[in-house]
Length: 108
Image (cartoon, rainbow, N blue to C red; front, side, top):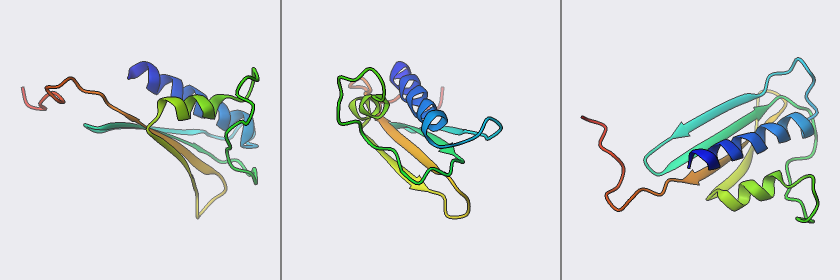
């Protein structure tokens, strides 16, 4: 799970830097939310690009497979626009596979 979350975060941050049209002094936001069932990775970019993220149609190409990787490891992914400022948030949710005993108790 940790490896998958790190991979998804890396792909989404890389996409934000490369494809959002942001400048060198812009800030890329990152949020990681963990629940009993999911790990949610969110990356916010301030870019002004008019196009949203899209899945590559040629999966054998050496470049541009980030969202294909995210789609393969995540239970879901999507894009949200910011109403009050330019940019967007791209997110994915990774399902946590607990052993049959379920998640550990919070109390010792």
